[in-house]
Image (cartoon, rainbow, N blue to C red; front, top):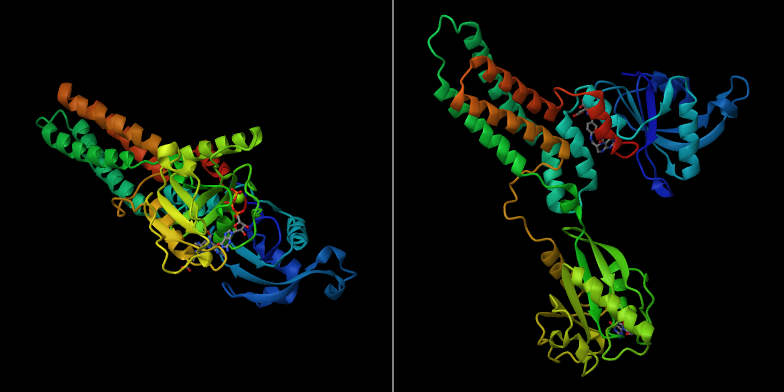
Length: 460
Ligand SMILES: Nc1nc2c(c(=O)[nH]1)N(C=O)[C@@H](CNc1ccc(C(=O)N[C@@H](CCC(=O)O)C(=O)O)cc1)CN2
Ligand SMILES: Nc1nc2c(ncn2[C@@H]2O[C@H](COP(=O)(O)OP(=O)(O)OP(=O)(O)O)[C@@H](O)[C@H]2O)c(=O)[nH]1
Ligand SMILES: [Mg+2]
């Protein structure tokens, strides 16, 4: 392993209130000295937030630090290895979130001998290599960051907490135990009576069951993380775009009293309690297209509706008659929920039940009904998992290791059934053990680590 010290921002590029930069490695104290001066080193206490002025030592005139250019006034925390995320000395800097400041800090830090920019995932890779976490946990860090909803996040936290690691380690121990006894049988096969194959068979079958159940829990990331899609549709001028703006709390989409304002469908991201969703505003569907372009717009609306996980029909509550073409019997989509818009223009007592299904009165002007609509969307788009105690794996690599283990187990069981040569059985169980150990990274290779961490973000 290279012993270079690494530096990278932990926060995304761009303007923010505060940014975060992390340095890890043996040169951390030197970085503190150059940024903050000799006295900072003397008073360096681990895990204590300090306010200080970071300067560019390269611009210093003579030996007087006060002449050096100020980069920022910021907070920093020093973590002394091995009690840090990576297990090495770590320095975290929290400057103001100006990209100029972040760039200058990183340039100055990089100018220290033995410091370079971190590669993607390199902090977590070091955490793994220094025994702070195993490979299942390291992979789950990416899941924690990229979980798209509450259930995924809960699963990712369980993986990070070591719930799967524990299961796999228990299985590895069982396999090692069997291996050890098999090896004994190999050594003493001359003297001893026949090995007890039936007992081996039962034990190995039990392990097979556990491996298979973890394997079956696999959920590919693509399948899990596809954001749910809600589509708003209805007659022109019904108030669809206004509703999107009201849900977002900002004037994102053009609104006007001219029917046909929205031409192309517009997609935004909305956060609900269960997670992020895609919300699409479509062009109004009129009884008759006014021109060829209008007809195309309506076609587009229908296309995106076909993909929707939730169809929300917006009906203008201020009108007595809404367009007939939004009725399902006229070929329009069957709504999951009907929204009666512009409730601020409605008489309180007016009937708000719609023959097309459950309905909610809303007003984009006053905000009435918006919270209720969000709750309904949340319930429809984030259905509770049937068994939320379940733990599932998300890593293709872990899946492949489990498949290898399962194949080895099946070969071993087959040997027991057909040709019980203890040596062969012992050999297969060694392979099974190795496959299981690859999952947690007890056995790993440079190639495997390269593959895993290349997919991480910079600074993780
Ligand atoms: N500022 C900051 N926030 C962060 C992180 C970080 O690295 N820095 N994390 C990065 O992902 C996550 C938290 N994970 C962390 C895990 C372990 C340690 C750590 O220092 N472990 C030491 C001490 C443990 C203790 O005091 O209980 C250790 O394991 O020895 C730090 C962060 C999320 N938030
Ligand atoms: N009073 C009142 N007016 C509303 C409300 N919502 C929308 N409007 C008005 O209704 C008109 C149409 O609103 P839009 O949001 O553009 O309607 P749309 O459904 O997106 O229309 P198209 O894009 O043409 O299909 C505008 O004049 C809005 O100001 C509401 O809650 N209350
Ligand atoms: Mg519109």
